[in-house]
Length: 300
Image (cartoon, rainbow, N blue to C red; front, side):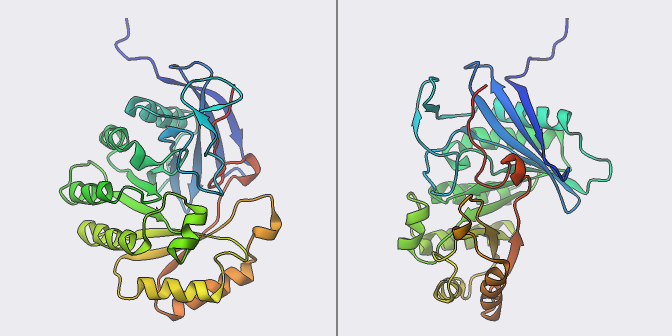
Protein backbone atom coordinates (compact mmCIF):
# COMPACT_ATOMS: atom_id res chain seq x y z
CA UNK A 1 0.00 0.00 0.00
CA UNK A 2 1.37 3.44 -0.93
CA UNK A 3 2.25 5.77 1.92
CA UNK A 4 1.79 8.84 -0.26
CA UNK A 5 -1.16 11.05 0.65
CA UNK A 6 -3.82 11.91 -1.91
CA UNK A 7 -3.77 15.40 -3.37
CA UNK A 8 -6.14 17.98 -1.89
CA UNK A 9 -6.77 19.63 -5.28
CA UNK A 10 -7.35 17.88 -8.59
CA UNK A 11 -6.54 19.23 -12.08
CA UNK A 12 -9.70 19.91 -14.07
CA UNK A 13 -8.89 22.00 -17.13
CA UNK A 14 -5.67 23.02 -18.88
CA UNK A 15 -5.74 26.05 -21.19
CA UNK A 16 -2.70 26.83 -23.34
CA UNK A 17 -1.93 30.20 -24.93
CA UNK A 18 -1.58 30.44 -28.70
CA UNK A 19 2.07 31.48 -28.45
CA UNK A 20 2.96 28.50 -26.26
CA UNK A 21 4.40 30.56 -23.40
CA UNK A 22 1.54 30.32 -20.92
CA UNK A 23 -0.77 27.77 -19.38
CA UNK A 24 -3.78 28.34 -17.14
CA UNK A 25 -4.71 25.50 -14.82
CA UNK A 26 -8.16 25.15 -13.33
CA UNK A 27 -8.16 22.83 -10.34
CA UNK A 28 -10.94 21.47 -8.14
CA UNK A 29 -10.72 21.50 -4.35
CA UNK A 30 -11.64 18.15 -2.83
CA UNK A 31 -13.06 19.94 0.19
CA UNK A 32 -16.04 21.37 -1.70
CA UNK A 33 -16.03 19.19 -4.78
CA UNK A 34 -17.20 21.76 -7.31
CA UNK A 35 -15.20 24.81 -6.25
CA UNK A 36 -12.27 25.67 -8.47
CA UNK A 37 -9.08 27.67 -8.20
CA UNK A 38 -6.97 29.03 -11.02
CA UNK A 39 -3.21 29.30 -11.35
CA UNK A 40 -0.78 30.16 -14.11
CA UNK A 41 2.38 28.60 -15.51
CA UNK A 42 4.69 30.79 -17.60
CA UNK A 43 8.14 30.85 -19.16
CA UNK A 44 9.60 34.35 -18.75
CA UNK A 45 13.18 35.28 -19.68
CA UNK A 46 14.28 31.70 -19.27
CA UNK A 47 12.66 31.27 -15.85
CA UNK A 48 9.76 28.96 -15.05
CA UNK A 49 7.04 30.90 -13.20
CA UNK A 50 4.25 29.28 -11.21
CA UNK A 51 1.60 31.88 -10.37
CA UNK A 52 -0.15 30.44 -7.31
CA UNK A 53 -3.44 31.36 -5.68
CA UNK A 54 -3.57 31.72 -1.90
CA UNK A 55 -7.34 32.08 -1.58
CA UNK A 56 -10.52 31.16 -3.41
CA UNK A 57 -11.55 34.61 -4.58
CA UNK A 58 -10.31 37.80 -2.91
CA UNK A 59 -11.95 40.32 -0.59
CA UNK A 60 -9.66 43.27 -1.37
CA UNK A 61 -12.03 44.67 -4.04
CA UNK A 62 -9.30 45.99 -6.35
CA UNK A 63 -11.18 47.55 -9.24
CA UNK A 64 -9.36 45.92 -12.15
CA UNK A 65 -9.15 42.38 -10.73
CA UNK A 66 -11.64 39.64 -11.67
CA UNK A 67 -10.91 37.65 -8.49
CA UNK A 68 -12.89 40.02 -6.30
CA UNK A 69 -16.50 40.14 -5.04
CA UNK A 70 -19.37 39.23 -4.81
CA UNK A 71 -18.72 36.46 -2.30
CA UNK A 72 -20.33 34.30 0.28
CA UNK A 73 -18.79 31.77 2.61
CA UNK A 74 -20.59 28.67 1.35
CA UNK A 75 -20.30 26.90 -1.97
CA UNK A 76 -23.47 27.75 -3.87
CA UNK A 77 -23.79 29.06 -7.38
CA UNK A 78 -24.15 31.56 -8.92
CA UNK A 79 -22.55 33.35 -5.98
CA UNK A 80 -18.86 32.81 -5.47
CA UNK A 81 -16.95 31.44 -2.52
CA UNK A 82 -14.23 33.14 -0.54
CA UNK A 83 -11.97 31.18 1.75
CA UNK A 84 -8.30 30.71 2.51
CA UNK A 85 -6.52 27.83 0.84
CA UNK A 86 -4.64 25.55 3.19
CA UNK A 87 -0.87 25.21 2.90
CA UNK A 88 -1.46 21.69 1.60
CA UNK A 89 -3.77 23.00 -1.14
CA UNK A 90 -1.22 25.62 -2.20
CA UNK A 91 1.56 23.02 -2.35
CA UNK A 92 -0.64 20.56 -4.28
CA UNK A 93 -1.62 23.35 -6.67
CA UNK A 94 2.08 23.83 -7.46
CA UNK A 95 2.77 20.10 -7.63
CA UNK A 96 0.02 19.62 -10.21
CA UNK A 97 1.30 22.55 -12.26
CA UNK A 98 4.82 21.11 -12.37
CA UNK A 99 3.53 17.67 -13.34
CA UNK A 100 1.30 19.03 -16.10
CA UNK A 101 3.87 21.48 -17.45
CA UNK A 102 7.32 20.13 -16.48
CA UNK A 103 10.18 22.53 -15.82
CA UNK A 104 12.40 22.60 -18.96
CA UNK A 105 15.95 21.32 -18.40
CA UNK A 106 17.18 24.62 -19.84
CA UNK A 107 15.26 26.70 -17.26
CA UNK A 108 17.37 29.25 -15.38
CA UNK A 109 15.26 28.72 -12.27
CA UNK A 110 11.81 28.25 -10.82
CA UNK A 111 9.74 30.97 -9.16
CA UNK A 112 6.77 30.33 -6.87
CA UNK A 113 4.87 33.55 -7.46
CA UNK A 114 2.07 34.29 -4.97
CA UNK A 115 0.29 36.61 -7.37
CA UNK A 116 -2.75 34.52 -8.26
CA UNK A 117 -6.20 34.69 -6.71
CA UNK A 118 -6.32 36.16 -3.22
CA UNK A 119 -4.32 38.46 -0.95
CA UNK A 120 -1.36 36.44 0.41
CA UNK A 121 -1.10 38.45 3.63
CA UNK A 122 -4.73 37.63 4.41
CA UNK A 123 -3.60 34.00 4.54
CA UNK A 124 0.02 34.52 5.46
CA UNK A 125 0.41 31.54 7.82
CA UNK A 126 -0.52 29.05 5.10
CA UNK A 127 1.55 30.96 2.54
CA UNK A 128 4.64 30.77 4.76
CA UNK A 129 4.09 27.08 5.45
CA UNK A 130 3.75 26.39 1.72
CA UNK A 131 6.97 28.27 0.95
CA UNK A 132 8.85 26.19 3.50
CA UNK A 133 7.41 22.98 2.04
CA UNK A 134 8.02 23.91 -1.60
CA UNK A 135 11.42 25.44 -0.85
CA UNK A 136 12.54 22.30 0.95
CA UNK A 137 11.56 20.20 -2.07
CA UNK A 138 12.94 22.70 -4.62
CA UNK A 139 15.90 24.43 -2.91
CA UNK A 140 17.07 26.10 -6.13
CA UNK A 141 13.76 27.96 -6.51
CA UNK A 142 12.71 31.34 -5.12
CA UNK A 143 9.40 32.88 -4.09
CA UNK A 144 7.71 36.20 -4.74
CA UNK A 145 4.79 37.54 -2.71
CA UNK A 146 2.56 40.29 -4.09
CA UNK A 147 0.34 42.28 -1.72
CA UNK A 148 -1.73 45.44 -1.66
CA UNK A 149 0.08 46.24 1.60
CA UNK A 150 -2.93 46.18 3.90
CA UNK A 151 -0.91 44.36 6.61
CA UNK A 152 2.24 46.40 7.12
CA UNK A 153 3.06 44.67 10.41
CA UNK A 154 2.99 41.35 8.57
CA UNK A 155 5.44 42.68 5.97
CA UNK A 156 7.80 43.81 8.74
CA UNK A 157 7.60 40.39 10.40
CA UNK A 158 8.31 38.67 7.09
CA UNK A 159 11.35 40.90 6.56
CA UNK A 160 12.72 39.85 9.96
CA UNK A 161 12.18 36.17 9.12
CA UNK A 162 13.75 36.44 5.66
CA UNK A 163 16.80 38.25 7.01
CA UNK A 164 17.11 35.57 9.70
CA UNK A 165 17.03 32.86 6.99
CA UNK A 166 13.93 31.16 8.32
CA UNK A 167 13.00 30.05 4.81
CA UNK A 168 14.92 27.58 2.63
CA UNK A 169 14.61 29.80 -0.47
CA UNK A 170 14.81 33.57 -1.10
CA UNK A 171 11.60 35.60 -0.89
CA UNK A 172 11.00 38.84 -2.76
CA UNK A 173 8.18 41.31 -2.23
CA UNK A 174 5.92 43.20 -4.63
CA UNK A 175 3.50 45.85 -3.35
CA UNK A 176 0.61 47.21 -5.41
CA UNK A 177 0.80 50.99 -5.70
CA UNK A 178 -1.26 51.93 -8.79
CA UNK A 179 -1.64 55.54 -7.69
CA UNK A 180 0.41 58.62 -6.87
CA UNK A 181 -1.80 59.87 -4.02
CA UNK A 182 -3.79 58.22 -1.24
CA UNK A 183 -7.08 59.44 -2.67
CA UNK A 184 -6.30 58.16 -6.14
CA UNK A 185 -4.93 54.85 -4.90
CA UNK A 186 -8.03 54.11 -2.82
CA UNK A 187 -10.19 54.43 -5.91
CA UNK A 188 -8.44 51.35 -7.28
CA UNK A 189 -7.48 49.63 -4.00
CA UNK A 190 -10.16 50.39 -1.36
CA UNK A 191 -8.18 48.78 1.47
CA UNK A 192 -4.92 50.56 0.69
CA UNK A 193 -3.07 52.11 3.62
CA UNK A 194 -1.32 55.52 3.40
CA UNK A 195 1.39 55.62 0.75
CA UNK A 196 3.99 57.20 3.05
CA UNK A 197 3.66 54.38 5.58
CA UNK A 198 3.60 51.75 2.84
CA UNK A 199 6.77 53.04 1.17
CA UNK A 200 8.54 53.24 4.53
CA UNK A 201 7.81 49.57 5.24
CA UNK A 202 8.75 48.64 1.66
CA UNK A 203 12.11 50.38 1.98
CA UNK A 204 12.71 48.72 5.33
CA UNK A 205 12.01 45.30 3.77
CA UNK A 206 14.43 46.04 0.92
CA UNK A 207 17.22 47.15 3.24
CA UNK A 208 16.71 44.39 5.80
CA UNK A 209 16.55 41.58 3.24
CA UNK A 210 18.98 43.17 0.77
CA UNK A 211 16.53 42.63 -2.08
CA UNK A 212 14.67 44.99 -4.39
CA UNK A 213 11.00 45.63 -3.65
CA UNK A 214 8.93 46.20 -6.77
CA UNK A 215 6.02 48.62 -6.61
CA UNK A 216 3.37 47.45 -9.06
CA UNK A 217 1.87 50.30 -11.05
CA UNK A 218 -0.78 49.44 -13.65
CA UNK A 219 -1.17 52.36 -16.03
CA UNK A 220 -4.78 53.40 -16.64
CA UNK A 221 -5.40 55.95 -19.37
CA UNK A 222 -6.58 59.31 -18.09
CA UNK A 223 -6.42 58.19 -14.48
CA UNK A 224 -2.85 57.66 -13.23
CA UNK A 225 -0.68 58.12 -16.32
CA UNK A 226 -0.23 61.90 -16.39
CA UNK A 227 2.84 64.04 -15.92
CA UNK A 228 1.57 65.15 -12.51
CA UNK A 229 1.41 61.49 -11.46
CA UNK A 230 5.01 60.94 -12.47
CA UNK A 231 5.98 64.08 -10.54
CA UNK A 232 4.17 62.92 -7.39
CA UNK A 233 5.70 59.45 -7.61
CA UNK A 234 9.14 60.98 -7.99
CA UNK A 235 8.65 63.11 -4.89
CA UNK A 236 7.38 60.13 -2.90
CA UNK A 237 10.35 57.97 -3.88
CA UNK A 238 13.02 60.64 -3.61
CA UNK A 239 15.81 59.36 -1.35
CA UNK A 240 14.26 55.91 -0.97
CA UNK A 241 16.49 52.87 -1.42
CA UNK A 242 15.79 49.47 -2.94
CA UNK A 243 12.45 50.38 -4.55
CA UNK A 244 11.60 49.89 -8.23
CA UNK A 245 8.42 51.00 -10.01
CA UNK A 246 7.11 48.10 -12.13
CA UNK A 247 4.98 49.58 -14.90
CA UNK A 248 2.30 47.32 -16.39
CA UNK A 249 -0.48 47.59 -18.93
CA UNK A 250 -4.10 47.25 -17.85
CA UNK A 251 -5.79 44.00 -18.86
CA UNK A 252 -9.18 45.28 -19.92
CA UNK A 253 -11.64 44.84 -22.75
CA UNK A 254 -12.21 48.61 -22.67
CA UNK A 255 -9.52 49.89 -25.01
CA UNK A 256 -10.16 53.48 -23.91
CA UNK A 257 -8.54 52.63 -20.57
CA UNK A 258 -5.39 51.13 -22.07
CA UNK A 259 -2.34 53.40 -22.23
CA UNK A 260 -0.49 53.52 -25.54
CA UNK A 261 3.10 52.30 -25.66
CA UNK A 262 4.21 55.85 -26.52
CA UNK A 263 2.47 57.27 -23.44
CA UNK A 264 3.91 54.52 -21.25
CA UNK A 265 7.39 55.27 -22.60
CA UNK A 266 6.91 58.94 -21.83
CA UNK A 267 5.75 58.19 -18.29
CA UNK A 268 8.71 55.91 -17.64
CA UNK A 269 11.17 58.39 -19.09
CA UNK A 270 9.84 61.11 -16.81
CA UNK A 271 10.36 58.90 -13.78
CA UNK A 272 13.86 57.97 -14.94
CA UNK A 273 14.74 61.65 -15.43
CA UNK A 274 13.99 62.13 -11.73
CA UNK A 275 16.29 59.24 -10.86
CA UNK A 276 13.51 56.74 -10.17
CA UNK A 277 14.31 53.16 -11.12
CA UNK A 278 11.72 51.38 -13.25
CA UNK A 279 11.05 48.16 -15.09
CA UNK A 280 8.32 47.13 -17.51
CA UNK A 281 6.03 44.12 -17.40
CA UNK A 282 3.62 42.76 -19.98
CA UNK A 283 1.11 40.10 -18.98
CA UNK A 284 1.32 36.77 -20.76
CA UNK A 285 -1.47 34.39 -21.66
CA UNK A 286 -4.11 37.06 -22.11
CA UNK A 287 -5.82 35.03 -24.84
CA UNK A 288 -6.67 32.41 -22.19
CA UNK A 289 -7.43 34.97 -19.47
CA UNK A 290 -4.22 34.13 -17.63
CA UNK A 291 -2.87 37.68 -17.40
CA UNK A 292 -2.56 39.74 -14.22
CA UNK A 293 -5.96 40.33 -12.64
CA UNK A 294 -7.67 37.83 -14.93
CA UNK A 295 -7.70 34.75 -12.70
CA UNK A 296 -11.16 34.12 -11.32
CA UNK A 297 -12.89 31.41 -9.32
CA UNK A 298 -14.88 29.52 -11.90
CA UNK A 299 -17.08 26.46 -11.72
CA UNK A 300 -16.72 22.99 -13.07
